[in-house]
Length: 75
Image (cartoon, rainbow, N blue to C red; front, side, top):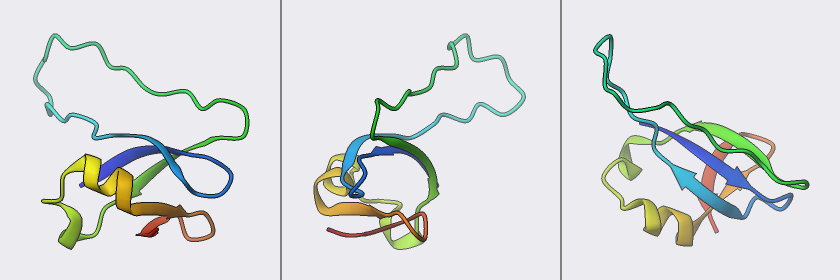
Protein backbone atom coordinates (compact mmCIF):
# COMPACT_ATOMS: atom_id res chain seq x y z
CA UNK A 1 0.00 0.00 0.00
CA UNK A 2 1.30 3.42 -0.92
CA UNK A 3 0.57 6.59 1.08
CA UNK A 4 0.99 10.25 0.22
CA UNK A 5 2.41 11.95 3.29
CA UNK A 6 3.25 15.59 3.90
CA UNK A 7 5.87 16.12 6.59
CA UNK A 8 7.63 19.08 8.13
CA UNK A 9 11.41 19.49 8.07
CA UNK A 10 11.70 17.22 11.14
CA UNK A 11 9.71 14.34 9.62
CA UNK A 12 6.55 15.02 11.64
CA UNK A 13 3.48 14.03 9.65
CA UNK A 14 1.29 16.99 8.70
CA UNK A 15 -1.17 15.09 6.51
CA UNK A 16 -1.62 11.56 5.23
CA UNK A 17 -3.76 10.20 2.39
CA UNK A 18 -4.17 6.91 0.62
CA UNK A 19 -4.50 7.40 -3.13
CA UNK A 20 -7.37 5.48 -4.70
CA UNK A 21 -6.86 2.95 -7.46
CA UNK A 22 -9.62 2.34 -9.97
CA UNK A 23 -7.38 0.67 -12.55
CA UNK A 24 -8.42 1.36 -16.12
CA UNK A 25 -12.06 2.06 -15.14
CA UNK A 26 -13.51 5.55 -15.18
CA UNK A 27 -14.32 6.42 -11.58
CA UNK A 28 -15.95 9.82 -12.00
CA UNK A 29 -13.71 11.03 -9.19
CA UNK A 30 -11.44 13.96 -9.86
CA UNK A 31 -7.80 13.14 -9.22
CA UNK A 32 -6.50 15.48 -6.55
CA UNK A 33 -3.24 15.86 -4.74
CA UNK A 34 -1.66 17.72 -1.92
CA UNK A 35 0.60 20.70 -1.97
CA UNK A 36 3.28 21.22 0.64
CA UNK A 37 3.63 24.58 2.36
CA UNK A 38 7.07 26.18 2.74
CA UNK A 39 9.23 23.94 4.95
CA UNK A 40 7.13 20.85 4.15
CA UNK A 41 7.71 17.95 1.77
CA UNK A 42 5.35 15.53 0.01
CA UNK A 43 6.46 11.87 0.16
CA UNK A 44 5.08 8.83 -1.66
CA UNK A 45 5.84 6.02 0.78
CA UNK A 46 5.31 2.28 0.35
CA UNK A 47 3.97 1.10 3.70
CA UNK A 48 5.38 -2.09 5.25
CA UNK A 49 2.95 -5.02 5.24
CA UNK A 50 2.57 -4.91 9.03
CA UNK A 51 1.11 -1.38 8.78
CA UNK A 52 -1.35 -2.05 5.94
CA UNK A 53 -4.24 -2.77 8.34
CA UNK A 54 -3.38 0.07 10.74
CA UNK A 55 -5.78 3.02 10.78
CA UNK A 56 -4.33 6.08 9.02
CA UNK A 57 -5.00 8.22 12.10
CA UNK A 58 -2.88 5.81 14.18
CA UNK A 59 -0.07 6.06 11.64
CA UNK A 60 -0.39 9.85 11.72
CA UNK A 61 -0.17 9.91 15.53
CA UNK A 62 2.49 7.24 16.05
CA UNK A 63 4.96 7.56 13.19
CA UNK A 64 7.30 10.04 11.53
CA UNK A 65 8.97 10.11 8.14
CA UNK A 66 12.61 9.08 8.12
CA UNK A 67 13.75 11.87 5.81
CA UNK A 68 17.00 10.15 4.83
CA UNK A 69 15.39 6.81 3.94
CA UNK A 70 11.97 8.00 2.81
CA UNK A 71 10.25 5.48 5.05
CA UNK A 72 8.03 5.52 8.14
CA UNK A 73 9.51 5.12 11.60
CA UNK A 74 8.01 5.06 15.09
CA UNK A 75 7.87 8.56 16.40
